[in-house]
Image (cartoon, rainbow, N blue to C red; front, side, top):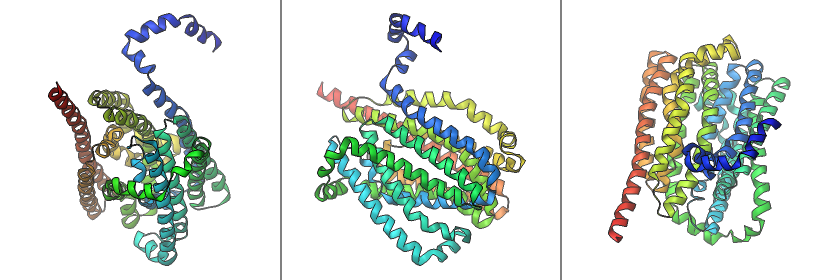
Length: 453
């Protein structure tokens, strides 16, 4: 390692020369690239550990346990959307920091109110909800939904504030701490208690660790700003950014209900084991995929919003990132599409081969999600959340029709094929729309410049 470092220090001048001439070198030395690496590096370690732990989890938990856990997480995915009314997405939008801070406070206050409502709802409607979901094993775990929702609301609010302040190391530390805690608790509890207890408690413990990391950093850097958070400003900003609860919250609920539709359908019409196999395979692909897209989205959105607010063109950045995402992902997704069942059998054991089969079916849809995810903030930036909501409603309807057709055949693989095909088509349209939004924004800037000239 020491020898490898010598050329770096002895060739500084030549490196600078290359940096000036080579586009790849300019990218590597750019702030954008450094921020991406900061987010991915620590988070990658956490995700690698988390995914590696599944080698153990697949041997101490059953597909039925994963099925109950998948149902719990699917419910949580929907309640998490309502936790902040999606005001955390607006934290990065204002130019003034005090507005971003009050939006962070507003999101946290809403999280408390929503969690209390959910707690009362679970107390009085536990059994009816369990029966409606088609799996009464979820009944005792519903009482933990309000706590998980509260922790997620706090964490997301502080995450977007950290992103606004470019505290990418804090975001990385929170993600890494959450993954490590989540994994260790799942393994430890799995050896001590049977059933899905360890999976669910591990998830909550991870959330708590992530929240504490963000909270500690916030108190360290922004404790003196707390008096700036007040009811008057929060109310004013709630009205100013009304589009986020009006469109983004409903959009989020629709999108998450749509994305988790297979879990609800498979649980009700097939079995918890089938749900567990599906969710296991989906997790193995979606987690590493989400790691990359989230990191790109967090840094890319901050960069593009800053450029848009200062009147600079953004389409070149969109083009560049889209090309890089395509080049980066084509071969890995292709390998999974061809060899997924063999990979799952070799890594996790023959009882998980079906999970690999289900995963292969989902690849066309997941590939389009990977390409489009980093640009999903553009409708918020250009205040066209209404159309984004309409597209997701159409996606939900198409998915319901597709899965209904599959269920009527009694074939679970055919059900997933219909779901994946319909999802891929709509997601591809979303990607084209995101690109057109950036193009129209730049054309508008060009038109204004010509008028001024």
